[in-house]
Image (cartoon, rainbow over all chains, first blue to last red):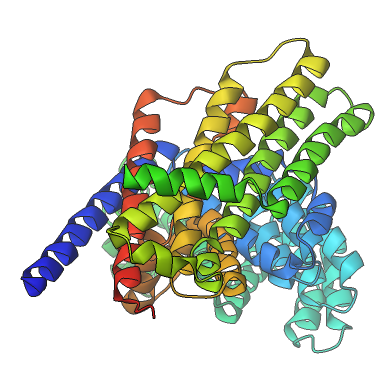
Length: 281
Length: 254
């Protein structure tokens, strides 16, 4: 009798537990997954929050970091609107001013996905004020000035500034050197992205870097192939029908490999290089 | 009938507790003091008074629920009145349920008094009181139903201080459990993911009851949402009280 009662009690608890689980799942769906994150924008500022979290500001910053990542991921998959990203990063870095990766990664996201480099550079300036010895922040500032703003001398100054800081890798001075020597802009940009790709463990940073490496590599291939097409036309007074024609005539050593995983072909109307893996180019 | 007797008895006992009045006084004082922030709020006085009032009702309600609930069973043991009770033909679940309902009745009184003070303040600042504020208070009461059950659960097997600490921690975690889910989703291993999600569904999700933002910003709270949250509150409470009864039944007195 007692055993039956016990089994019955356990079964009832299990049924109730399962129902609670289903209710919670539905409540979550109704509340919307990023409601909490959106609420961050109601906070007046990180300075206020810093007082309010009673000494647990690093923990609070970590939680906000997790939410920021989730916020980014969510909007990247849906509407591609990141209007609160700058505010979230500002709160986060006020709570934990030494959170270097929040500045560098945040600046990259703001520049590449959100409002543009101005907000990113503001974030980086705040980072440099708070962390004058962290080379990563001026390096990222140089990176953004070089790649996105094409302000080469400012970029070189930031690379140089980063290179003089403790523990800075030799890449900082190397890139400063490239810029001062006026090396080909695409080549330097490509190296910068490769540098980022190799130095980060952050998945989103790696994906972004790879996207730009592929884009720049294809631009390089296009320049090469389209140059060969021009030479072909000048020599044979007609356009090549296929890419292979450029190889058989010795104008190209080989057809370059498409970094996007597809294969290249010549656009039959414009004779520009196209990739089967990318609709636009 | 027996449950009612225990409930009334618990209510009478709770309203004699000094802690209740201290907390209530502080709650009302803090709520009214939000009026002092009005000159600093740069046109946001209505929002600030509403935000603070609703938050303080929730916070002080939870503190009273935890501090009173955590000593419910222990007090009976300490005063040895438990022997008089269990020697009567009262089932253990009746005892637990009676205690729980008695405390809920006390909290109803506390929340009613604090809400009256809050509404008076809102009327003073706004010149009117939006009925939707009552909805937020109602949700807070549902939250307190869960918090009280949790505090009572701990009090069936530990001392008041430990029970209060555990209940308070659970209260804090209950408001952060969304992050637990987030953490689970971002963990690389299936084991870590599963563990975080297990905890997420196991621990009370008190954020379900937080509609304060929606009410202050005049956003609708649907009937469907309300009924799901009500269902969650009742079932979760039922489970916690059932486990508390099971533990309490195994305890030997005497």
